[in-house]
Length: 52
Image (cartoon, rainbow, N blue to C red):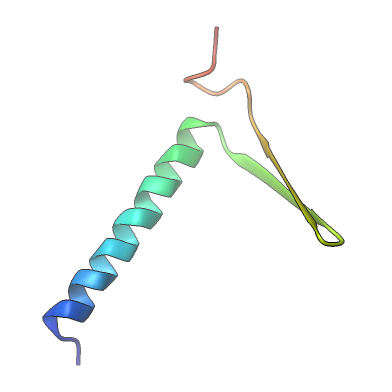
């Protein structure tokens, strides 16, 4: 069973994930590479917002 507080928390989590997914879509995707203890993140610079 879920109470109202748990449902609101789940909705908030989903909304945060949706905002993140929309940002990634607008950037044209994302590439993440893990090497040893380092995490490298690269964005597509040909994305819709960054196109000049």
